[in-house]
Image (cartoon, rainbow, N blue to C red; front, top):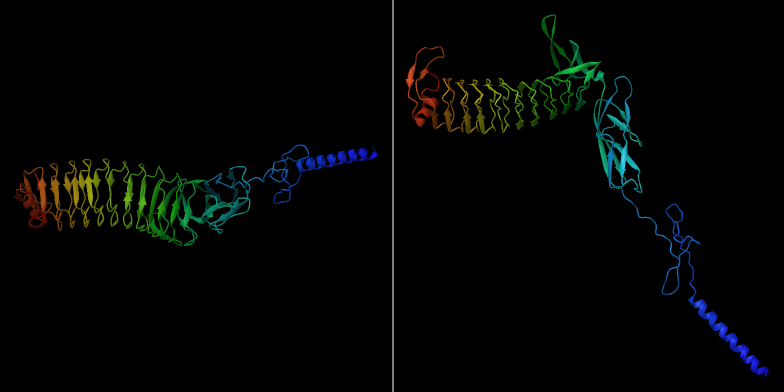
Length: 448
């Protein structure tokens, strides 16, 4: 009996051991995985109770922590100003630039600030810009992944300029920095007076009248000026021999523009307020608009603009002046509108590639040598209202055909003052070309 009881106890114990083995095999084992960030701070666990969440595995169960957040890169930057002007006339000029970073939750918001010219403007690590000498600098804010934003900074002092006050207006003639300033910002006011005139600037000589006598004032020229930024107060511009000048803004309201021998300018926009224009000697000028307010294209207005390819003369123009387009070698065609009444002496002389000319019906007079040496000009039509053609008007041209819309009462005279001359028939277009180029080339032509 005792033996039987011992066997029963032994069987129970073995059963219990088997049950315990099975339970332990099926019970999850918890392993703590200490994810942490670069500063050693653990990331928040996903289980609110005991900070652990069991997760199935083929071998056992491992508690799961949330993954570290992904690095969020800067996608773009912007600054609160794209252009900044600092005036250091009376004190050191400073201003803060404020950068906006996108997206706002970017991981690394550290920026690097740089200046293209620290002698003009310095910038610190907080975006504070401090003015230096006169000039132009580009301030750049850059993120660690290369995204950037820029602000153009112009700096000046009123003491930088040569100027005179005349009838309550400031007239600027140049700068005191000689050849060091390449980009120059002209302020609206100097010494509380509005800046209305920009004159000379690069050639170092100012002509002025003192007690009724014309005198010269000399100062150090600035021949390296590349850009002039003019204020809206300016109404008169007269600049010559700025050989390095490539860019200038002409504000609305300017009535007179003279930029002579500015040989590096290629394009220029003239506002409709301009009534007087002279761009002679701008040898690299390729395109220009003539404003609708212009009443005349003055003498030598485009003299020797040898790279000027296109010109549109508006209907406001009534007069084309003496040698207005002299030596415009690249000009291939021109249309003179009906509003024009007179084409001046030598207006298109030596336009050697000019092959197409349309003369408007309003023209009454074609000046001496107006189209002389236009070698590629093969044909032309003389409108019916023309009554005078000057000496050598088509001398050296390539004319083979000239058509007169009005063929009656044409005479050729040896001098402009002559009261009588030789009657010429102009009904044959081929013969007309010979007359104008050779036979009566140096005669004055009149229609009675």
